[in-house]
Every structure is written in structure tokens, then in C-alpha cells.
Length: 259
Image 1: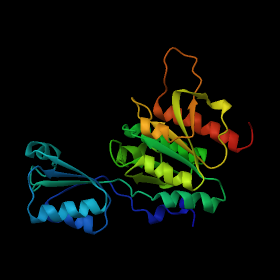
Image 2: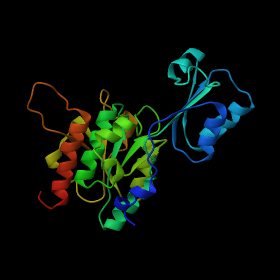
Image 3: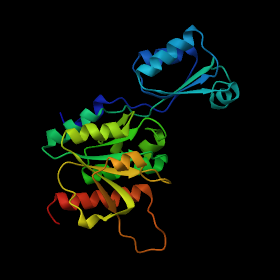
């Protein structure tokens, strides 16, 4: 079954602050997708250890914070018992789901990898563009990046239901593993080769960097090509979602055979 028909199998959640030890522990044990866990710094009793153990099983980011910070996050008037979990708006896919999506469509994989996108509006817009450009999925890092929040879902204009988003611990390792499967990777950078001079056909991953710092050094070193978007204006960069659109549609143009 293609991923475009799998939206009914994905569980949509409204982002939720889950407070209290029993509630948080049950949320993990029920399989709910938890993006972040806030724990009172220094609290290491039995229930808290059980919660953090469950969190690590699901690769949840754990933040140890002060009571004042927990009280600020709390929506129960501070009755959080030293722990607050933040659930995702949507479940994440696996990288294998993205590859399967391409296989079932009979197409060479086209994946967009986002290296530290922090603005939820950018991520939502990129998901929308990815869907329209025929990308088979998006990969984001676990840390230092926005997750699938309600703002992302709204900005995607529904595309989040059709375009799988996978979250991984290490982007560089994921790129290496996908290279072993025959993929090539191109990243966006002003010091690269003009995108029109590159062969962007075949099994390809497009890497877009952080809004301020661009693609990180290690990720860039593991890309096969560096593409520059020609600029004619007075500033030297584009918004991350716009840059994604420009490069994604150059990939579309070349995949259609119109070089």
C-alpha cells in the first residue's frame, strides 16, 4: 500500500502537554509519540527513572530543568509532579517507509533532508512543496530542529497526511546508509556549482540547511554535489523553504527529461 493511502494508519494528535508521573508513563507505554520530556533537575526517584527509561526507548529528547521552568510550561497550575511530556502533532515515519513509498510508485527515490530547520512555518511549507514536487519523504534530525507541531501541520496545508517525515538521530550516518543503497546527495550552498550545471536525475537526496548557518560542515562533507542557486538581487540568500522549492523543481525538471 502506497504511503499516500496510509494517512488513516497514522495517528494524528493535537500537541498535548501531558503532566503528572502516571499520565506521562502511561503515554509512553501506550505508544504515543513524545517529542520532548521536561524533568525536574536532580529528581531521580523510582517513578522518574521509569519515565526516563521509557523516553530513551523512543528516542525522546529529555530536558532537565528547574522547577520555575516546569511551572512556566505547566497548564495545570504547577501540578506536574516534576515531569511534563510534549506529544507530537503527528506520528513520524521510518526511513524505510520513504524508500518503500518510492518503490511502490516505481520511481527513483527523491528525499529531502533538513539539517536543523527550526522555524515551524518553514518546515510546514517545505512539507507542502515536497508533496507537490513528488518527493517521497522528508528526513529531519532528532535534535536542534523543529518537530511535527500543530503549526507545522497547519502550514503544510494537509500535505503532512501524504508526505512521510522521518526523524533520525544522526543525519550524517543516515546519508551514508542511503548512499550504500545507491543514492546521491546534493546540498544547497552559495559556494557551490550553479544548479543548472549539475545532473540531478536518478536516486537523489536534497539537503537544505539551517535558516541561519546553512548545512553543517560534516553533513556537507558527505554530500556528493554542492548546488548554488543563481542570485541577481542585493542579498545573498533565500528563505529555507523558498530555496527548497527552487532546487526541488530543478530536480523535477531534470527528472522529467527536460535538461
